[in-house]
Amino acid sequence: MKVFQVRRILRDALSGLAIRAACIATLSSVLAVDSAGADSNEFCSDAVYDPAILAPTVKVVTLNASHGRKRAINQMLVSRKRTYQNLDDIADLLIRIGADIVALQEADAPSRWSGKFDHVEYLLEKTDYACFVHGHHAQSWLYNFGSALLSDVQLVDTDSQSFAPSPPTTTKGYVSSVINWQTTVATVPLLVVSVHLDFSRRRVRDAQVNAMIRSLSGHNMPMIVMGDMNSEWSNKESVVKLLADGLALKAYEPGEEGQGTYKSSSGKRLDWILISPQLAFIEHSVLPDVISDHNAVYAEIGYLGVR
Image: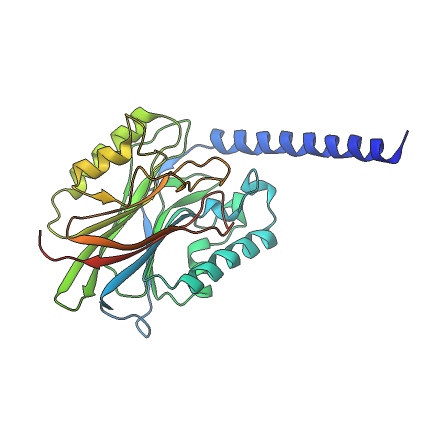
């Protein structure tokens, strides 16, 4: 048997083992008893944070951090050392971009399946951010994760909301906070939200979005809603459009081609930044860095005034 044939046999065998291991890992995560997390963790360094953003524009970024696995098939196949390295890559991007506010999804508290350390606290240590709020939406013996916000400035009236459990998929939810913004013309309180919607069923996403609309529609302030919404704008049953319509929000060029955010090869635009009519997109881009199975989405946002 020739050398190249032996190499091919070994490669195929190892590939098969990896696939089987990933299937077992995924099945294990699905079978874990998932409870909607009612708690959250938040922190603000008194010595560091500012009371408000002092700038004519606000810079934001949203990223599904994929449990620190980057583009591995499953986080249980990633070593603790590699998980740290993957989060270091995320931290490097956040430092380079210099956003005022970061929205994260699939952000882990200490979890057996992703290294047994808090990914949000680690990112705070590795970057210049002073404050965070981290909602623990899905909890079991295997995992504890949810959505989070990192900020340069003080987080006010923070809230964490878990959606109704949606087995067999893990529970999703959102976190929100008011952040004060001193523009050139006024001090503007912003309601900022990081959300993750269910990936598997439209009816579950519909229920989650309707719950958000009921909860957030009473706020009389400009709003920035960011996150992995597992929906494209072009679908006739798009929950992104449902959320935008329900909260009177707008997206950046929603029908534009070439804005895919999930696994570059798929071209699916699943990660969104939605803003109120009082706000305007100055800049918007999907960042090319491979730090997750999702691309980070960045926006610079200006203030138009009362509408």
